[in-house]
Structure formats: C-alpha cells, structure tokens
Image 1: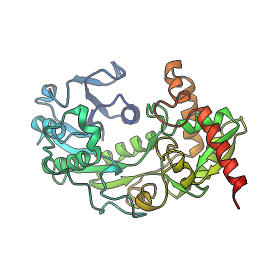
Image 2 (image 1 turned 90 degrees about the vertical axis):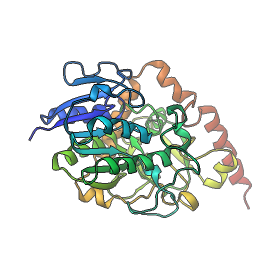
Image 3 (image 1 turned 120 degrees about the horizontal axis):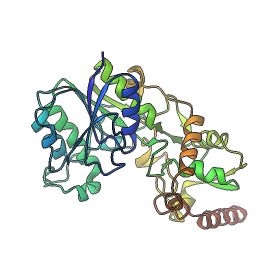
Image 4 (image 1 turned 180 degrees about the horizontal axis):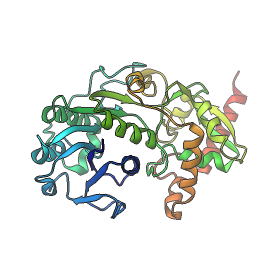
Length: 349
C-alpha cells in the first residue's frame, strides 16, 4: 500500500536516493528541511515543509505520517523537537544513526548489542550548539537513539551504517580512490592487501530503508557492506577494473605510514589499521541487516558511477581532491612517501 512518508533532510547525500526510490514505488513523500542544500531539488514532485530542526518545527504542526525517516539528526534536541509536534501522529520512525555510537571498535565482528558511547561527564545533550556537535558526534548520536526510543517506543527502527559511498558524496572519502586510480601510475596503497574495508552504496542504504518502511520492520541494525568481507586490494582492483589508466598499487605498511604522519580514514580514506583499537572498525557485523533484506550492488557499479559523477562536478569541487583539502594526499606527497618507502626497503637488512 502507498505510504505517506516524511523525510527529514532529503536533499543531501542519501536523502535524494530515498526520495527517488520511494516515489518510484508510488509513495507520497514530504520533505522537511531548511531548503538550503539544493533548494527546491524536487519541486513539483514532493511536498516541501520549510523549517529548522534546531529552532522551528512549526511546519509539522497538525501533520500525520505513516513513516518518518530521520536522516540529519545529530542532536537529541532535534528528535525531541520533532516529537513535540508528531508524537502520536507517526506509525513508524526510522532513525539513520551511525556505527560511531559504539564505545569500542577493537572487537572484530561485534553486533548491535555492543556497548554504546556515554555522554561526556557533565554534558547537557539538549544544550549543545549545532556548530559544536562534531566534537562529540558518536555520544550525541547514541543519545539521539535513546531519544527516539523514548518518544516512539515499539515503533522505531535504528539503522547504523558505516562508510556511505557513491554519487553525491561531498566527503570524498571513497571518491578519492576512483579519482586517484583513474589518473594511473603508481598508487600508494595503505597497509596490506588483505586489510578489511567496509562500504555501502548510498542507494543500497536508501532503497533498503524504504523497504524496511514498507514491511514495517522495527529494531536496530548495523548496515555496513558488502555482504562478504572485502579486502583493500580487492576494493582497489575492483575500482581499477572500471578505468583504463593502468594504475599499479604499492602497499606500504601501517607503521611506516604512521611514522610519516599518514593516517587512516583521512590521508588514506576507507582504510583503518586492522589491529588494536581499530581492529573492528571495518569488520562490524551486518548479518541482522542482510537477513532483513539489505542487498548490495556490485562494486564496479558504485566505482564507475561515482567516478562519472565526480567528473561532472564543478572545477572548484574537483580541485578539493587535487589539493587534499578534505581527504587523501597530494600527488607530490604521495610520490614523496613512495620514494621514502623504496629507499627504506633497499636499506633493510
């Protein structure tokens, strides 16, 4: 049956994919946002309510929805504010959380029952300014989950994705690799070929979220991908397969990278050291989500369409990767690290 769906946000990264999939399946979609990111992106196709989760949710007054999909919430107050207008008027509340809620990433294959991060001592989670939220992102997301459970007991779904990738991703944390590999030459690769990585295409996450709404599935689910373990070399080779540049990969061990100030997730995106406190960061259990119908498109599709999207971006956005302003390393720094590694290897006994 067609659903009346409210999407909080909806014009950023995963939201547009939710809108496209939901409307293609005959659902009625309403967006609530500030109408600043891609203003009027779906004009004429969905209803638009303008407001601010932090300060003005009056546009929700008197409304009722079968499903609410909460994409952007970082602060517990945003859940509380929406509930002030919609509590008792919602059939199903879906909260897109994060694997960053977990207290530890040291345990491989930990599931949804693992302990969550507490709030810092003395913090009032309802008094945090949006500009300060990133400092305690994980604890605030964890407390937001509790806020959801308080206002929508027995009718909520918590989805905890890991690294979301694909077209429209402004973070460039995956885009770096298709872009870099497409340039060809010797590519600095981190760690070892077998180091695990986990990624999920935004479209797979979005489409599964809508199907969970259709089936009215409640509970908490980790949502990393793919279904089976993926190694760093397998990911890089899969990306290379959709290019024609003939890149070659040189793996440099984690201790050497650390000594050179090269960090996982930022300088070497997607990858994290697979030992110690990050041993489970890219090996989070997803069996529960897979059993609930989460599926994954081929890596080649994600890589090709992400690269095509990146090439269509304005020049100033493409330049962010060239200058390593957000993630990755510049071409000069990459060449320097590779030269140092070769010199070190030659001098080894």
